[in-house]
Image 1 (cartoon, rainbow, N blue to C red):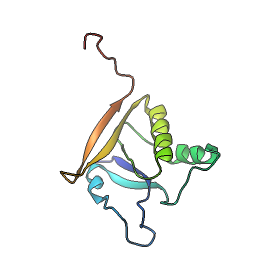
Image 2: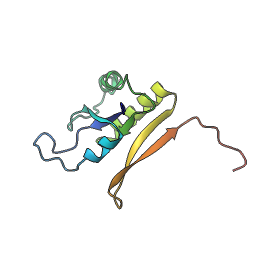
Image 3: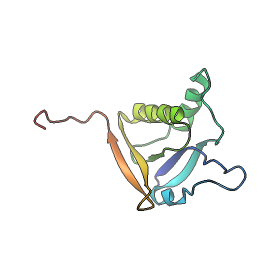
Length: 117
């Protein structure tokens, strides 16, 4: 398996060696690659962060996954960039608190929905 799990932001507490959550379970879906440090913020100008995320996500493929950690604004931008790269088809990992595991979710923004539904 050569898939990559793009961890949008490092887990809070990671710098001190005491992460608040354990994301190792996501590694069953691919190699974990952290994009931004836990303290990354989207300030008034989103341009520099968008440029950095575009560079970090340039090799994203529809077989890879996004692990949605961190600032919701940054998560939104990362999802938008990935959608742009893959024409709206990408994967997310969603944590299930009851089962205590990640579930893959396939996103296809442009799927054709039947009007008979």
